[in-house]
Structures are given as structure tokens and as C-alpha cells.
Amino acid sequence: MLEFWIDVGGTFTDVLMRTSQGDIQTFKTLSSGMTRGAIQQQIAVDRFVDPLRQQNPEGFWNGYKIRLFDTDGQLIGTSSIIGYDHLSGELQLADPLLEKALPGFTYELSSGEESPVLSIRYLLGLKLEDPIPPVVVKLGTTRGTNALLTRSGARTAFITTEGFRDILLIGNQDRPRLFDLVIEKPEPLFETVVEIKERITVQGDVLSDPDPIQIREQLEQLHQSGIESIAICLLHAFANSDHEELVESIAREIGFQNISRSSQLSPLIKIISRGDTTVVDAYLNPVLQDYVARLRASLRNSTIQLMTSAGGLVDANHFSGKDSILSGPAGGVVGFSEVGLQAGFTKSIGFDMGGTSTDVSRFDGAFEREFETRKAGVRIVAPMLAIETVAAGGGSICDFDGVKLHVGPASAGASPGPACYGAGGPLTV
Image (cartoon, rainbow, N blue to C red; front, side, top):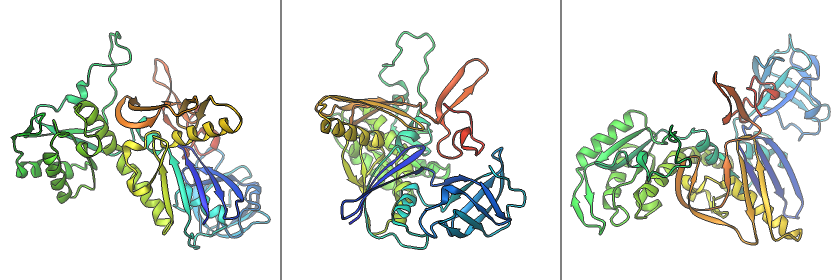
């Protein structure tokens, strides 16, 4: 069976394919799933030539949507590809958009499929209408990392015991710059807090039972307000999870699809660490589940495994937000350590700069792991490789707020990408 190793970053996706005969092929594309190019020669009002499209798989681009841009990155129009000559690189449009087109005008091709699917189709020479055969996909992605760094996860609510609504905001008073007079707190991942009237002792005995009717009313208000995901973390739930399970069951009856429960994810005595981990999981799960669902829609009957922050692979159905933080970087650590060993080096340092973030790690003959760490201002309790990540990469946006210059944490990503992509993107590193 064909095997694919895929690294999906915030900007680029890199793919390695191994055939059953052991042959290796590689491919690189934008993580947006778009393919960019420029008009070199106009043949007619509906046809042009781009040398970059020469020797692409025969008929590959037929059916793709195309967006045409002028030299300022302004959209001229959209159409679809109805003809493609892989020898000359000529593309034929369904509509005459090229009346005012000039050499140097740029275009984007897209099918709506994710970049790993585009890459697999390209390497196998499959057209849009061709089904993808069963394959094995092993994938690492920075979707979770970048969503956390840029605060682009799901709208999340934190559900906790009455009287503890500020527990995660207060934290444990530990901060990087302890003596700063102006304290900058990290932006919380949750949007709102719901307090449940209940209490369990540290031994797991019930002091106060929750009211299911009141819980339902509280959760229905959340659902109506547009909250996408909920993080349930009740006091002493590590000793007795009954109340958390009750809240979860009511939430599912109401219609919540994304629910993270602390007693299941991180059944530990420390409520702050447990709560932070649960919130991270709830914040990222919708992003990752939507992504995996889109992959499965195109890769039916295929085996899809994702890299966890600990450097291992799990089935896509068991991939969760808390395990995704360093999914992409963890694959890099496993890779560079193996390359170093094969080259005769038992110690090595990895520096991985992508379009959105930069990751640094080391290998001294064994993987260095952490079980409680802080990433992007958030405390996480989960096994992961020791990797330092900062929101600075080739696509980090340069900005001026009137007082000082900023670089990041926002990234231009793959769409529109940096200004040099010619799609109207911002100035970046």
C-alpha cells in the first residue's frame, strides 16, 4: 500500500510518498490548498500559458477554480479550468477573463480540498473526479500550535464549581517577569464562565448535589449565544467524576458536539493545571476535528494517523487538542535526531523555522520530555517533547502601533501570504 508522510505547517505542506517498490517522491505546496502562478503569455481571452504548469500530471487542473489578480493583488475575476495542456502549460478558462490581462498577472488554483489531499492527488496523477485509493497517511500538523499562538481557536466556555470562576485567571501567581510593575496577563482562551452549584470533597464524597434543571438552563444559554466548545472542570473531580459526567450528558442532549472533561483528560489533584489543560483541549478540538473530517471525506478507506506532541502516532479518531500543541514540531525532532544518529552524531540541535512559528529542540541520545509546561501563555499537563516555540516565522506580520514596531504573533499564513506572494498580503519577515 502507498504510504505518505505529511507535514502541514501554517504556510507550507511538505509530502513524501513511498511506493510499494520503495521508490520515494516528494512534493511541496501551500497549506491553504491553493496553487499560485503567473501569466507569462496570453493566447486568447480565455487561455494563457504558465511554464510552471508544464509537466504537471496530464489533465490535472481540469475542474479547478481559478482566481485572477492584477499586479497590485486586486481580484479581477473568478472562473474554472476547462482545459489543460501539460506539455505547454496552457490553461483554458470557462469564462473570458483575460481581456485586460498582462504578463505578470497572478492567479490561484483551488479545488476546496485540503493541501494533503491535493498533494496525494498530484503525486498519484489523479484528477478531481478520480477517487483516491486506500493509502496510509502519517501526518503532523501545526494547526493546533498556530491556533493557540494566534488565538484562533473555537469560542469556548469554562464550566467550574460555584465560587471558582476566577481560578484560571488568578492562576498560581507564577509569571515570567515577576518584578514587572506593569503586569501583562495572557489572553484567556475561554470566552465566558458558568458556575455549577455542587461540591465534592477531596476524598470524593458528595457535599452538594447539582441541580440538573438549573444546569440545563445555564447550558442552553451558552448554546444560544454561539459557544462552540465547553471545558468542564469541577473541584475535586479527579476523586469523583459523577458531577462532571452529569454536566457532559446534559450538554450533549442540548446539542454541544465539542466537550472536554477534566476527569477524563487530566484526572489530577491540581485544579489550575487540570483546568488549563481542559480549556486548551476544548479550544482546539473543533479546529482539529473539522480538519480531520475534511481529510476523511477525501481519503475514504484510508488509514490516517497523526503525530502527537509526545512524538508518537495515534489514529485520527483519538487525536485531541491537548495532544496537538507540538504535533508538527515533534515530527521534526524525531526526524532530525534520526538523521543525526545516522550521520554519527549522538547529540544534535534542531532549529525549525516555518511560516508562522519557530521551534528549537535538542537531542542528546534520548528524547527530552515534559509533563507540565507552558505554551503560548497557557499551562498544559500532557506528555510532550521538550520544544521551545515562539510565534515568529517567515510569515510573521510586521506592524507599527504608533509607538513601537511589532513582529507577530499574527501570521500572513498561506492565504493571502506575505506581500511577495502578489496576493495583497501584508509586510512580513
